Amino acid sequence: MTATRHQTQDPTDVLSPRSLLVVDDSEGERELLALTLGAAFPAAEILRAADPSMARQMCSARDFDCVLVDYNMPDMDGVTLAGELRLAAAYLPIVLLTSVGDEMLAARALRSGVSDYIPKSRVNTDSIRRTVARSMLSCSQARLIDDQRDELENFAYALAHDFKQPVRQIATFTQMISEEIGSDAGPLRQHLAFLGDAARRLGKLVDVMSQYTLLNQPPKLENVDLGHVLVGVRASITPYLAERRGELVAPLNAATIFGNETLMAQVLQNLVINGLHYNQSPVPRVEVTARREPQHWAIEIRDNGLGIEPEYLAEIFKPLFRLHAASEYAGSGLGLTLARKAVLAQNGLIWCESTPGRGSSFHLQLPVAQATPAVG
Image (cartoon, rainbow, N blue to C red; front, side, top):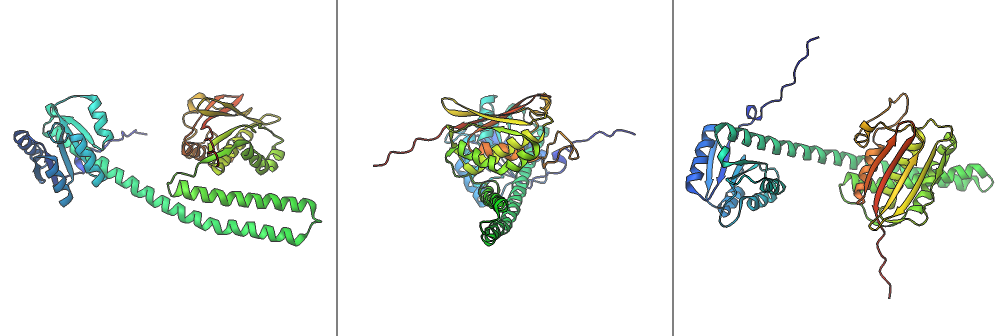
């Protein structure tokens, strides 16, 4: 079989600007750059602006495929102008030109919204063609990614909205069945109580995910008692603990963080179930401990499971990444991804340490609880 080499397409082959704007306070350098751009893009219209004020007016009056901005201008430097233009047009390609070869300046420029950066000493027909085309391609891809993200979030929001009705129905009919069978049905009433609690937790989870994951808004943060959260987690996974003949050791009565209760329940439940699921010990065991640090709580979820090879520790939080075939261990491949996102949403950190064959330890750093204002 003959191997074929993947060829990366040159952006200059697919992008040809129709209108470009040069912003430079020096008439000579402005005209020289315009001539170079004209040679690089013969079909493009090249317009000129002598100062930032004129550039802002021209950009508000028409759309440009790329704006090339000099850094050294008397009234406003090019990085500041780029930031203002980026606020007005999120996907406008902006190239900064300067005679100062300063990497700190380049970093500041990229943070301010500049698409690319080129010293004037390196400007020629080929380099300016590549830089402009690369900037246009980068901004085009950013727009496409944002459009796809918006479409996905809208779809996910609609999906979550559709989930809420059957969840409510499960909770309602569970309650009705419990009332109908009366007080004599012992174990059955207990099962129905578990089902009702699960439906309520699912409803809360859908609400939080609709707010955070789907609407891309930060979740509501407040003081959360992790001991209370773990009581709920234990109740939720009691059947699974019995099935696996596992142990959950979790004395966290004193740990109170500043986070979101529903997200923390999801994180801890996911990590505990992972420790029990990917485990071949005669007695699968997960232990949750907490240690107070000056600025955060350090939470550790330690198991005696299969462990993870060192080269995969950086990959396990990626979406759909799986260490084992679905035929060996069932799972969605999204649990750790969602756990990481939920921890980050609470201004926390999460990472994993592991020894293959001996188990894994997931570490969380979460902000300490905020002081409650005195009443009266």
